[in-house]
Image (tube, rainbow, N blue to C red; front, side, top):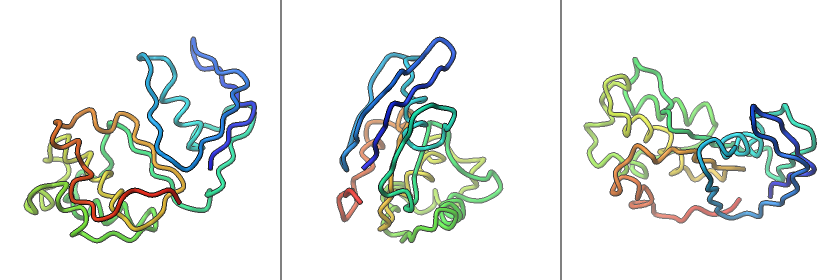
Length: 166
């Protein structure tokens, strides 16, 4: 569970004042106009923006957090497979290639250098981490799926287990 207690933040023309909210262990979708502060709020919830007043408490803080944006994560000189393995090692999560392979449709895409991959496949490096057996304290997808076709956005296809709360 994540709890916001009297959280306030001033950012450009935007401000949050004394926000109190408790996020139960479930899936949430945050909608709003461009510039309304969605990404700012997500960074606060994830603990990535500490220039706030108030407190953010995460009862699973010792578990890894996964925060993905519309920009892929990867090193340009590694292929997609190596980038996935490196990302998993950095987060300390176990990942089986067979679990995320359906995300790429063909194994040959995993052998492509990150710098030569499509933007969609670059973003799939981060999404592959969702297929870990690890229970994250928080998963945030901040516009991560916007570059994908409708078919690719159904990234849960091929998952042999549902995403579950920690």
